Amino acid sequence: AVTTTQKTVVLYPSLGVGHLNPMVELAKVFLRRGQAVVIAVVNPPDKDAVSADALGRLAAANTAITFSLIPVPSRGKDHHYPHPVMRTIDVLRAANPALREFLRTLPAVDALVVDMFCVDALDVAAGLGIPAYFFFASAVGDLAVMLHLPYYYPTAPSSFKDMGKTPLHFPGVPPIRALDMATTMRDRESETAKERLRQCARMPEATGILVNSFDWLEARALEAIRNGLCTPDRTMPPLYCIGPLVLPGGHTRGSNGERHPCIEWLDAQPDRSVVFLCFGSLGTFSAAQLRDIAHGLQNSGHRFLWVVRDPPEHKSSSISVEPDLEALLPESFSEKTSDRGFVVKNWAPQAEVLRHGAVGAFVTHCGWNSVLEGIVSGVPMIGWPLYAEQRLNKVHVVEEMKVGVAVEGYEEDLVKAEEVEAKVRLVMESEEGSKLRERIAMAKEMAADALKEGGSSDVAFDEFMKDLENDSSESRKKSFI
Ligand code: UDP
Image 1 (cartoon, rainbow, N blue to C red):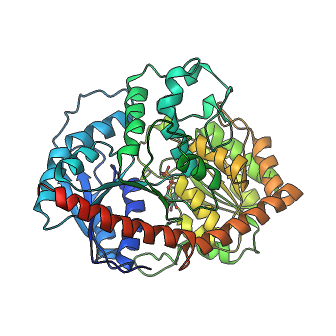
Image 2 (image 1 turned 180 degrees about the horizontal axis):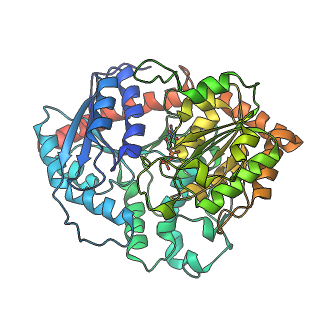
Image 3 (image 1 turned 45 degrees about the vertical axis):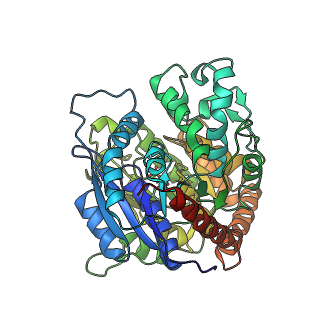
């Protein structure tokens, strides 16, 4: 790694712990390279604040990082937003003056690193003469689509919601069916889509873009962006693939030092024999869907470890509500599968589970962190996208990286038990499953290589640090601070 003088880098994630966690992983990379890191956490008064507990835990586990809260004025309870993402953008925009004040209180700031929803913070950085970078915590393939959307969408024949399965063509990624585009983009006349397009169009304004991926995994998308195919009339800032940064998979222990019961259970299962089902921080299924998953697993005959949550129709908006498994799962399901199945309520230590040698397949909602955790663990995936940009990620995983398959019918009301069984059998038993396993074993190796000293992600971070040094001294010359 190159040595540079110590820099102070302020990381600025979007709302919620889901955005904070990847920034903490990024902070660790800066720290390993001797830089000083402050994470500025937006703290809205009503919803979406990172809980004091979660923040306290993160701060205790990462004492070298300074966590600072950025207050935001209340938006009023009755304010109606057409989509939750609009609320996020609005809250973040309202936080700009407080962010500015906060940055001014620091003795020195060499860089502001923001996540993809904090586009408006570019204005704060520009006003203070600080170089601003994005940390794009999703696929390069998603970035290619987002960068190209402002060019593509206005001239598309209609809104994506009216184009069904029509394949859309973006540079560097496989064809994407219109119905697999992010929900925020479905109606191009909507306020939400217009706002997102505005944000996408501003992304090239950053001084650089760090991406949580690695060159080998997404070479085509990377090349398309770098060659300007996604943004024909704009110069793209440098792109640095510095991943995969994922949650450490070390042994997570409870407050009394005990291991999670599901890990103890995995210890007793044969190698690569267990199908693991887990759907991100928010994923839930209807009671009817839970029953079909149960039947599918039962009929497959395979071992499984399944994270089950209360269905949304029960209106328990929080995963702290315990699902009533007796009532939700088919009668006699637990008796019939007790020798080969383990159900966890609400939350499992996913990163650790995936790294366990007993796991042979991962049924995932295709959140990017989950995809990367699957890759670094070498576990083939069965994609079942649910929300946000997960349908796009499914396309990358299945069509481009070829490290997984997807369940059919995820875009309809119900994925049938037979389909769950078929995909589990395909990955666990078939020739195609063996190919996926070989391919993901290779991806796992390439991920490890990328992170090694001299590997592509290590070198990209060196380059980023060198550029940062230049960018920040350039800015300082012009600075108003
Ligand atoms: N996760 C976990 N246990 C669970 C569900 C999720 O540890 O039961 C972790 C998972 O390992 C990942 C993160 O939560 O690091 C989910 O991130 P991802 O980007 O996959 O999905 P999101 O929650 O943002 O939809």
